[in-house]
Length: 317
Image (cartoon, rainbow, N blue to C red):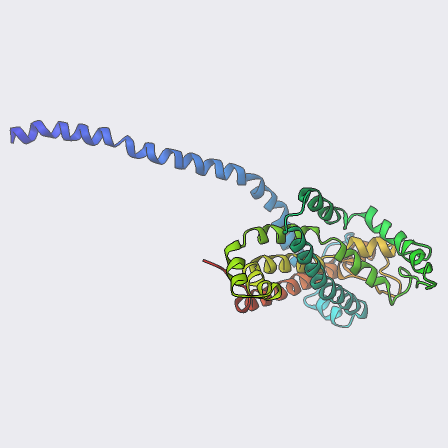
C-alpha cells in the first residue's frame, strides 16, 4: 500500500502534466473556429438585410399594398390576377425566348473560344482579358446605349450592310428584331463562362489525348469522348449560372426600350414588367407575387437541370 501510495502522486503528476497538453491541442482549433466565425460575420449581418425582405415580400404577395396604405390581406387574389394578365404572359414569353436562345449560343461560343485559347497562344493573358471585358460591361447602361447606337437606323450595322447594297431594318424599333439585338448582346458577353471553361480545359490530363491519338482517334472524337465528359461539371455550372442570370435580365430591356418594354412589348422582360408594376403603378402586392413566381420558375428549371445532370455530367473521383 505504501508503494502504491508513493506512486500515486507521480502518476497524478504525470496525468497532471499531460492534462494541460490536451487543451493546448484544442486551443488552436478553437482559435481557428473563432477566426472563421469572424470572417463569416459580415455574411451573417448581410443575411439580416435579406431574410427580413424575403419574408416581407412573401407576406405582401397575399396583400393589396401600394406603399401609401396599410397592406390589406387579399389571399390568392394577386396570383389569380396574374393568370389573366396578358402582359405578364408576354413578359414570360420574351424572357423564355431570350433565355433559351441566348444561353446555349453563349455557352457554345464561350467553349469554342476557350478551346482556341487553350492551344497555348502567345499573349494568352491579353486575349483572356480582352474576351472577359465584355462580361464586366455587358449589363451596364453605357454598353446598352452603345448597343442601341450600333443597331440604330443609321448605326454601324446598317452602315456596313449598305456597303453591299442592303437596306438594314430598324433593329431597335422593329418588334421583329429588337429582342434579337439583346440576344446578340448577351452572347457577346461570353467572357465569364469562357474563363471558367478555359480553367477546366487546363485540368484535363494530356495523357488521355495522347492515348487517343495513338489509337487513331480524330480531333472531333477526342473532343466528344474526352473533352466534353471531363469538363461536363464545368458546362453544368456555367449552364446553371447563365440560366439564372438570363431569367433576371432587366437593365438591357429597360435601357433599350426606355423602360416601356417596347416596341410592342417585344423587349418586355419579366423583371422589367415586375419593376413597372411595383415602382410605376405602385402595386407592391402584385409585384411581390410576381417575384415569388419568378423564384419558383428559377427553382423548377434549376431542379430539372440537377436531376438531368445525373445522365450527362461526369465526375471523375
